[in-house]
Image (tube, rainbow over all chains, first blue to last red):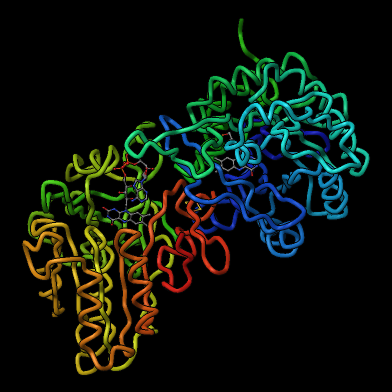
Length: 334
Length: 286
Ligand SMILES: Cc1cc2nc3c(=O)[nH]c(=O)nc-3n(C[C@H](O)[C@H](O)[C@H](O)COP(=O)(O)OP(=O)(O)OC[C@H]3O[C@@H](n4cnc5c(N)ncnc54)[C@H](O)[C@@H]3O)c2cc1C
Ligand SMILES: Cc1cc2nc3c(=O)[nH]c(=O)nc-3n(C[C@H](O)[C@H](O)[C@H](O)COP(=O)(O)O)c2cc1C
Ligand code: FES
């Protein structure tokens, strides 16, 4: 028996439900040669911005118990160079390319980017990274009261005006901002839209529902949790910008909880991620309600892990006589 | 070409109480390695430590010591040329501590060879190369010395001059090994317990001052950042090219995470991909 692995995310059909997460797979060429890229279900690019972006000063990473912190700060060559130099490489692999986009403060950049990418046939879906914590962390040295006294980032009002980037609020931390942004992008593209959510919120389901209502085809969660690490000897923070995003097995229980919560509140597919290291972790996310899963930090530890998980899922389904992965999704027993 | 492989540990011996030499059977990596490149080693099967550890290739070994016969025979591999790599490492934290406890016969998941390598073609003719090592920074320079010896005919070579700097006498690594392959070795120790008393950069300065054709030299260096910064200054002062090997904290080691960048005149570059070897005048020192 050959189990059916394909799943649908909006109009996008994935031959298997295992994709690689934004920012953890470069532009894929780094893995060429020793990872069989053709087998991967889909590749999400590193987040792209309108202009080239230098990123944060080093050190940008630091190991933590069962995980790591990063403060890359969305370093990327900008959309023009991406389209000219990186996209052809991604396209050649022959697996669906999902392009992750973000603004550098002005939310209109999301709309401009989506418009530009909408014209490109080789891009099958757009992921809205409204949840990168590393723009906020640049502001970490500012007094907290100053941050708090600034007006909350009301994105609805901000579309059409430059955003106040000093609020330190992520779009995905506010449901009306999320709604306004997704809605605005939805207007300019028919491509599959995925909204990537932040775990740094009180109630992630509110944000997920706002994205769904605004026309997002799927939600992807979770992005990293804001964390910090200190060198007790030197008394200095281990990251140059003080705080960064926590990822890896350390965040898996939180990610699973959030996928489970969101699964009960929205109808659109969920791409689950956060600390997935092997097939068993992946199965847990499917049980919690994820239609597809994304492998992130694990790619650094074992570059071949996504392929191993695909093989592992196939084997599991075969051995347990499950004909179709779709019947396994959300199968948590209570 | 990058390989991910399970390398059989052939031996892992203490050179000093805090410093070890490990020999790993990995013919593909060994065959493709160039001086300056490194490998990423998965230290444990669990999550502690979580990330791989980057370590330079110290030497490529094709002839094995007798005590290595047993694990080699077990591995069922023909003892081919360029079959193993040697790594010289200092125990500084939990990863290197665990590595030092690994036993012959164990398999280690390693990825390599990674990064760029020292550029030998910039070396002037007749060859004059000065290798400057600070502490454990000798690690990649030994492989470089071997390669220089291999690539340049004896008649044309002024054997590389190797300057080794250390805090104290018993932290001087590899002096004999360098001499064995024909290098001229000079030592500098902070406490003067051996050789020149003072910093290895000052020893280098003294030597260059006394050399009339200093411009025909290339400096290759690896060591702590302040030392490399000083090397960079010296290379400017004497107008000599210097290639330096940098370290930065790494998550992936293969260029995917953008975590290991260093500031250069052309913007941020990845130490694991565009480096670890850089032209000294390229780096912007803070
Ligand atoms: C390209 C490259 C080549 C290297 N070659 C050698 C070598 O040949 N011999 C040798 O002894 N050491 C070498 N190092 C340094 C070596 O990687 C660190 O000593 C080692 O990672 C420390 O791990 P730990 O768990 O023992 O220490 P911990 O302090 O517990 O490590 C914590 C984290 O910090 C990172 N880290 C700590 N020190 C360094 C460092 N100096 N550079 C980069 N990351 C660091 C670790 O990888 C780990 O992620 C090299 C580093 C790089 C980047
Ligand atoms: C080094 C690094 C860089 C990342 N860059 C991005 C990014 O550019 N865009 C994005 O949406 N998420 C980014 N992420 C978040 C991951 O895509 C993922 O959501 C998160 O790491 C949780 O999954 P994991 O624990 O499997 O890594 C990054 C994560 C890491 C570790
Ligand atoms: S360590 Fe990931 S890019 Fe260098």
